[in-house]
Image (cartoon, rainbow, N blue to C red):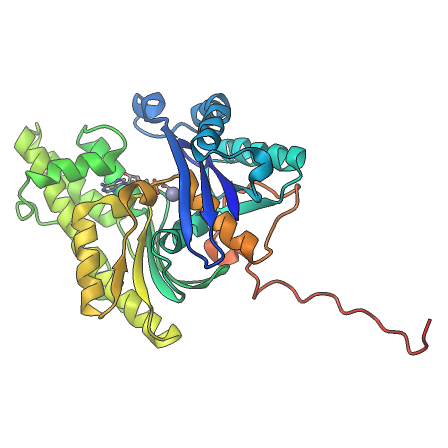
Length: 362
Ligand code: KG4
Ligand code: ZN
């Protein structure tokens, strides 16, 4: 089964072709990602209107490249998948409409994929991780701990009360004048900084419910930065290191609470799976492997280029759904908001209508 996947929910224009074997194993045939970072850098964040226009300009070329690298033509594909949300609605419309056109013209099934589901299932593409597993999804827009019990069967265990972790990294970078996107820049500064110089809070630490809160940390960081203004190079590095250390400790504590809740509600997970752009951070990957070790389970952290937004994860989620017969109609709606728990899988599909048998043979 060979599926084309299209991703346009944020600031990456991406397309990929992925194959799913009869044994359920995945293989990436191509994975093309065009980042719009330069278009947005001057604004210190993603500008939705600029993103949508840039997707329109680049998407045909990106898809053409992905198809050529995979050595595929549209008639050799088994399905066309696109991220139908959640995300910036202009970009989502561009990707989903393009997928619909390709599906319609070539008479192929369309799979309207939830972007978060694609992050959630990436571990099955890279490692074939069996269900159920505990997912730590941390990106620019989401911070969630989930029980992944099957395709379309996701239970939210914990989430953030305010900012997402990626967003907190981005805001820290902005505050310290590092630029955008913030995550990798803060990580780089943190490497040469002193993590114990600034005493920052660890909000929610020790609470039994596995939720996060990051706005207090952000405010505390701003107050510390204001105390030492004007900021020298070492001050910036120390602030980044102290911030990253606080996040690492929070993740450790919150994931312990999440895994405890997982075990109580769903039995033993097969693995702790990391997903989303934040999982590209080395210090965070280290603490994830520590917590997995403490619970005696495996850590599955896909390579960084498959943690950040990409087309391969969309194609793979499309293939997983297609294999279960979960395709979508051409009127599938693009969605700005689409919580993962609302994604419908086979188990939760409404029962097929019962045929009414008449008592008398016709
Ligand atoms: O999953 P993703 O590529 O896009 C969303 O769906 O949001 O995640 C992007 C987020 C951004 O907030 C970015 O700053 C963060 O992931 N990020 C990182 C790192 N690389 C990306 N955060 C911390 N450390 C990193 N190395
Ligand atoms: Zn994402």
